[in-house]
Length: 194
Image (cartoon, rainbow, N blue to C red; front, side, top):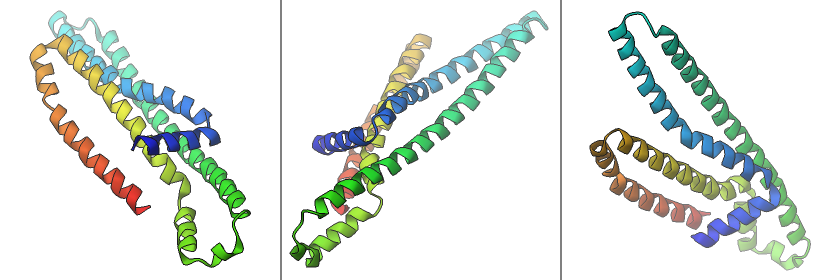
């Protein structure tokens, strides 16, 4: 499995290097977004509680926190749409790169192989959605990294608030492991089918 990831990363790196840097930057922000949202909600609840105790003082802080939440929501949405756009653009560039490599290889193949049915089936399987086949493992790997970063940050934040809540949070680790095992089996099934 690691060899498949390595080959996919190497192939994508040859065709579109900038995609990795931009995706990594967006990945870091998207992994920080849940902890920022939780922190803002915590500050909002504390500000409302203080405002109710003190009277009408502190309404400005509540408005600022609400505006930050709206800006964070809009920014997250823009980043997610940008990520989708960049993934599609990278996929198109990767397909172009792969087509060029396939055509270069086809010029050196003897004519007898063109009549071979297995060779034609192999070319037909390669011809459909080449970019997505190489991008899917990389996107899955980056999603796993983002989830791990988010999980660690949420654990630290919850441990800071209350250690009992963090222990309940850590009880979800077996479910995550089971999901990873099932995802690994689905990955191998996808590799076997393609």
